[in-house]
Amino acid sequence: MEKVTYHNRTGQSLSSLVFNVTPAHYQAFRLQRISIASKEIPYKLQGVVLEAALPEPLQTEAQVTVEMVFTLVVPPRQGRFGVGNGIIALGNWYPVLAVFNGDWDRHQYVEIGDAFYTEVADYRVNLWSSEPVAVAHSGTQVSHEGNQWVFHAEKVRDFALAIGKHYQSASQEVDGTIVTSYFLPEHRAGGELALRAAAESLRWFGSTLGRYPYPSLGVAEIYAPTWTGSGQEYPNLVFVASGPYANPGGMGDYLSYLIAHEVGHQWLYGLVGNDQVNDPWLDEALTTHTTLTFFKQDYPTAFPSLWRSRVTDGYEKYRLEKGDRPVNTSIYDYDDELYYFAMVYRRGALFLEELRNSLGDEAYFRLLGDYVKTFSYGIATPQSFFAQAQRQSKVDLRPLFARYFTYPWLKGLSWPASTPSAAATVTVLPALAATKPATGIPTLAATPGERDPAEVILYSMLIGLVLSASLVSFWLLKSPSRGRKRR
Ligand SMILES: [Zn+2]
Image (cartoon, rainbow, N blue to C red; front, side, top):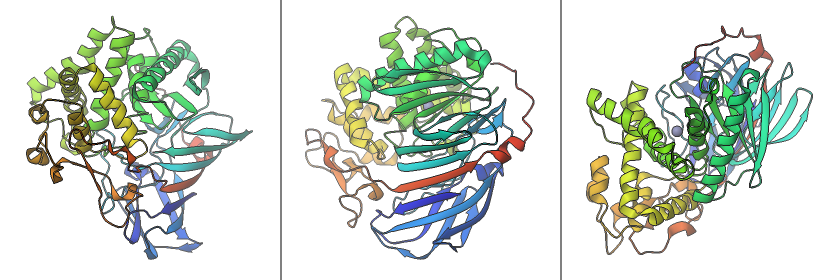
């Protein structure tokens, strides 16, 4: 059962609530009913978009609590949502409220990239299991008795779990945060490297982008023998495929890179949200580039080969084979995930490297820090990133932007402008602009030299979510044949 309390800060009255239900894509989701105050309400589920009609319009600033009763049959499959090798990976596994920006976001799921776009919320999760398991989770554990757990998470963009029959774990404290690595017994060396990579990168990102504000961070090995994604970020928790755990090579190897990358997402996706469907470069290119900067600074001998393997080699290969594409392509523009990685992650990192060279290290890191500070718990847009970059630069950055991006609004940018123009403003989603809910989209001046717009309150506690999950039915599924294929 899922109970969602929604506070309408959109500035307009709403006739429905929309949820994104990724497990429906796998025919894993059986909805029994949706109700408000014990009265059932009508709904439509189209693809992964679940729209529940409210019995009466929800006025601005009013709250409503919706209850959903559903069953999940977690499929025997690899990756971020599936069961295998005694591990249940529960990523994007429940109906999550869509983002409202003038209208509800109704994007459909595709297997390319991360088809997710969410706002922050508070969670309370009750979990029961039919047998002893270890649980890696977002948030913190409130209680644990026998096979029952209660978890709590504040101001997170999602809530994920990885549940293992055979998990072993190792923990370490980093600047007040408990970092825990969960791994299979045969992968102890990999699990220990995972812990080290997570702890070291957490410390680096914290000092570079701003303090990690959560009490815990988990790294969980999941079943995924041939998954190209290989890692997946969730708030306070990252999933990493078993393959790279098998032969760990130390800091600078693929496992350590993957983990540092997913830890970087704790800031770039977790704290600072963005539309991962239409503008995936904003978190992926930034995370790729900053992760490589971590290795460049702390493991300089590993950096050159990492830069080639994570950026230039794959980009050149796909540029020659399939053609160059703008960095601002969406997950819907690809049917080959490696081509998507080449243009969005790798070419995006090349853009950021040019930007860093243009600004110089000091201004570039100030840009990253300001960006995280301004948009923590909110949602950033490409416009806002470009505006903040321009603010750090004495030269006109438009020619650089235009070499990598084809946003139509780029042509209308007038940099550096003497007065704020409509094109040179940062848009704050109305749902997030708690200070001005009734007057539409407020704008932030982005003219170089203007004061920092951080005073606009970006954080708004939109949803409280209570999830109850029972694992009993999950374990009745036959586990797939144990994948021993290694990449
Ligand atoms: Zn990523």
